[in-house]
Length: 225
Length: 315
Image (cartoon, rainbow over all chains, first blue to last red; front, side, top):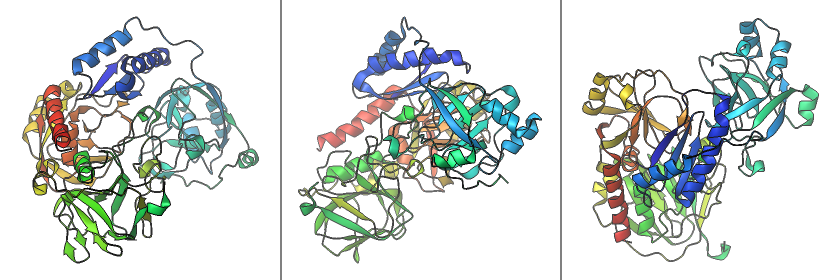
């Protein structure tokens, strides 16, 4: 009734990002205070507008005009974050599962997970939860059959070829590899998430000592049953 | 806030779920933050209307009741709307749909649902609770908002303060038992872009069979039980989820997403219930029967406007 789905692509691709970011900017400008929410995802932007001020037809017209002659956002889009992670089976129990599936050592899994920049495709699932990708094919691992009831904040995880960090303690079915002490979303950040769509993230392996120095919580996480 | 004139309710006995809500948290969905807010927004608006408050002033959403007991620390005028949860003021029954006076030391209790599931208790000017990301609504999962600012529901010993003084004495301009969200069980659905991917039989069933409210129902979503629906799309690339979206996971049993839904998701959808019908669903108890009725965006909007107009006409 007051929501329109703007569909720009059919497949997940890093090349979509500059277009999605540009569309995000253009739509925000076109709707101004009549925009209630705009939710970008991998291929779409969901637009929630004030239906008491704009008719359906007017909303469509604004979208059309906003997307006319759209230029992709510049190459330097997004911030780059380096996220220190303590990779260890005590806080990342699925290191073992991912290593076994890939036929690689745990050290090699860690090296490869840290070996490239990941793009933040979308935020969702929980506040500040950035869906990032893509991890290399060899590391791709399906979600757990039974999600954990509690995944601690800061847990770094993968599912298929995506990777993410749990900003808050929550239930979750992703494969946990390690933990970071960096706050992703909490009152200390005044409700602003660290990661935004279009940002790039590079993980860096650190020792337990370093993790503790950064204020990390070393409480072990049980492996999934 | 002027503490000299603030009043308070104290939680003597917590119930299954009572939380501070307002109209919802908007403008932050792109950060992964959910909407939250009053699930039956119409009854919530009317509760505030009774006291002459701003429509989205912070009120209490009381789900089920289940023994929730609140004690007034000062004399006050409050308002109750929405579900009839067998409320009592000390030993006297208290019907929803009007303002009422409570004296210092008096207790307000809620027992069991007699009609509907969610009652709204409003106070003059709304509860004084901090805004978090532009809203006072509590969302437990996100640890945001509410009376403590951390998303928590009411617990024993908590206090809820407000500082508004003036309050008119009013009754609803209609029979509270016939409130639109308490009696509406034909849920209007605006079809979405994936509707063509459902099989013909599934579509026939979706709009002709009765649907039963499952036990698995909370502020995130309500499961409906009925015939299995099949969609030719397995899963999709995750996209934004509007309020009232009717998604169909592989087990074929629809889930209607409410205020605390996740912001994006990848199950195919029949479409979305109108905000009005979503509020009706939020008043349904497990085991109740509802039906889905297809509607157009234009019709839905006309209904929506007339609903809001009624509120304004009486304002």
